[in-house]
Length: 147
Picture 1 (spheres, one colour):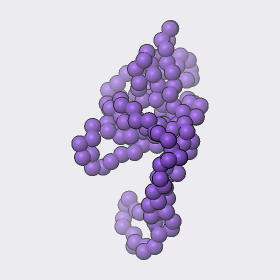
Picture 2 (cartoon, helix red, strand yellow):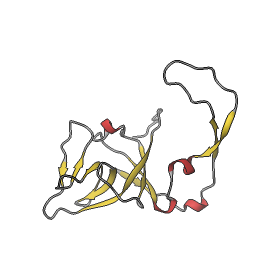
Picture 3 (cartoon, one colour):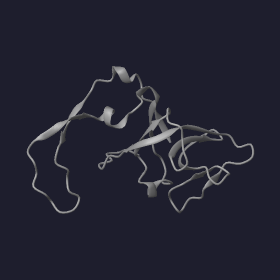
Picture 4 (cartoon, one colour):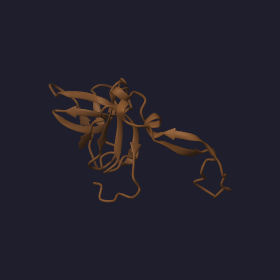
């Protein structure tokens, strides 16, 4: 898993993109509305704590049942305290991984969300550090060489 750190957030210019008031139907088509509700900034939409946020590109398929696929970019917030059930970025024995945190009942486990993979039980003198909680997934439907 490669890591892309968010640099100086304050120096990033705002990019306001039109946001349509009408929601798009994923079922039957509805008549399109011809006006824009407002503009949104994707940084504002995806990042709550800029100074504590970083991005990580996903490698591997252990989280596909959670809707996280190879090549996706995860938005990770270091300021959030990880709770049972959160999807987190952790370092386990110095290896970075994205998994679902399982705290109860003990022991702590890191659960893949792909039935082809086994849960990881944190036990004994294993060293695990939580780097942050995944808050958003960014996916390109046109991969264009992404990995």
